[in-house]
Amino acid sequence: MNLGIYVQVPFCQTKCTYCNFHTGVFAKSLYEPYVDAICRELADRGALHRTAGLVCPDSPKSGHGFRPADESAHPTRPLARQGACEDAWSSAVVDTVYIGGGTPSLLDSAEIARILDRLRAEFTCRFEEVTLEADPETISAEKAAAWFAAGVNRISMGVQSFNDTELAAAGRAHRRADVFNASSLLREAGFAKISFDLIAGLPHQTAASWADSLEHLLRLRPEHASVYLMEIDEGSRLGREVLTGGSRYSASALPDDDAMASFYESGCARLAAEGYEHYEISNWGLPGFRSRHNLKYWRREPYLGIGAGAHSYDGRERWANAHDPAAYVAAIKKGVSPAEQREVVTPQQALEEELFLGLRQLEGIDLARIEKQYNAGLRSRVEALRQAGLVEFDGTRLRLSPARLTVANEVFVELLG
Image 1 (cartoon, one colour):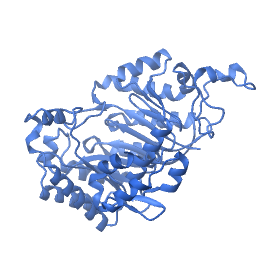
Image 2 (spheres, one colour):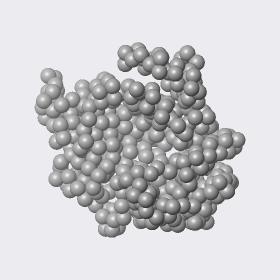
Image 3 (spheres, rainbow, N blue to C red):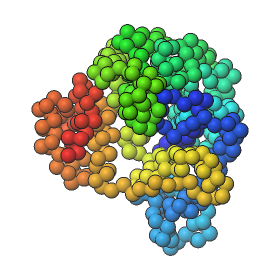
């Protein structure tokens, strides 16, 4: 079994106006204790899981995930062995790592190396992809060289825009020049896998400024690009301002929905024209440069989350660690699992995930397999969506119509009934 490991670093130097993540600005004195807790969670994960009632199955290949604690006895395994720090991941091969946040690049490079060294000590590691999220203004020649030497081979850069007015309104700390400088430093350090994020729909964004951001991205030619539509919800300062009719955070300067959709569609066309493969609704890669780690999420493969707010999935059950970094560190110090929000995935939930996550991938899903596996009859709904031009179905694979990706959520609602 191949395993992806996600490490959450919730620290930021500024809080973006549109951000609805459980991240924040914290004192640097908290960084080292937090990394200590990450390393201890990795080392003690088996014992920590048992404090939360998460007990490993007989075999990580069984596909049944962790069992309730009262089912943990194994007739041929000594009790002392059961109490050791074993878990369902012990025989898995870790092939992808994603250190995200927040802004992990704020950590000292030696702390990034510590995390990767601990992973190597605790797992069988054959790293194919080790991604570090980084903001442009936090990247230096020294850090880039140290990350590369530690084993990081992919950088996901939070660019968001190449327009300084848009960046300032969004609360970003960097400016366009920082992106060009950071890209140069990463290339000089040896990085051959770089990804840029852009947001379609930032305050003050226009068709001209969006086109300009796309052109700057293509000028730097990262191997991968993610384009996200601006989300408006009460979890962010900007979202709350928009929903309550306020004007702070440049809320009145947001493009309307039609403009955002137009930006996204023009991005699709421009990236395709330059050789990028559109493989997931928000993601493009040059041939051979798709995000291997993120594909695990969309394909519902096992992944282990480490750190405050990190999520895990073992094929049967999902759980998430406490979001508050201080609560997370305190739990680890006490030898208690920080896991919460546990949920055994029901067959209905699994079906919904197969459809929602599978159809986000432009190659679509094997409808016959899904119908058989979940005993679900979906053909009549599929046919109605096909006649409406929202999906394509060749008798085997079902996929979203490329021209209707901006209304994907509506398609999911209709398909799930």
